[in-house]
Length: 238
Image 1: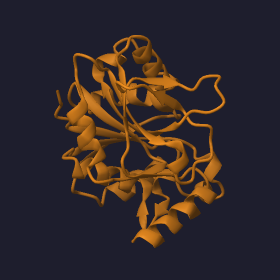
Image 2 (image 1 turned 90 degrees about the vertical axis):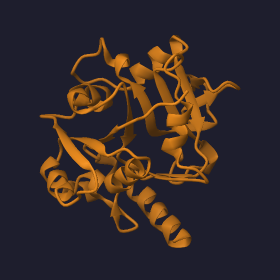
Image 3 (image 1 turned 180 degrees about the vertical axis):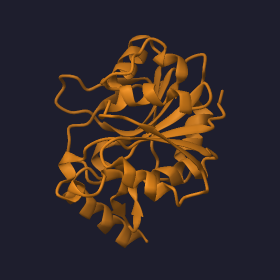
Image 4 (image 1 turned 30 degrees about the vertical axis):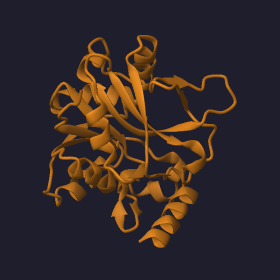
């Protein structure tokens, strides 16, 4: 059990409405946390895990993103351009021709993952089992998430199978936006607006979803308040 993942995607096409007014002139993935853009933080995680082919889907203020990453040459970076944001699911479908391998990594571009004792992505690739999985989600304890004040997203059982919170008031784990996905999970999906949640739901129903609990820190940077908390975190831990 394990897989060699060679390709990763950063979801970078959103409008960033909750981050306004900062995102009126700057796309959210280019907002800086501790002097480095959030998208660069994501690409750093891919690079240190040995993934050297990266894709960013872009739409809103996408030219700024292309210009910024034209200066980064430690990875091979491609862009999947959307005339309008296709949401997470449609965005991945459109980018599939650019993504390599039977399994690839996808990361949300509005959060910062800080590794614990081990590299989180390496732990995920080591846990991957193609006979049992189409989806592997990285979850984080809700009460330890920085900049997050929601109700949580998932439960997880003793063998690592996740379950949505659904109509329950709270759940102990929040989804970090970091995931490994099998290409075959997209076989019947179309290039239109839809959420990756559909992929998770299908995999959970089929018993082919697993989750791993993140050992390090996770910073949700979806609002100006979250950005300030992230800056405070790095100031204290630099």
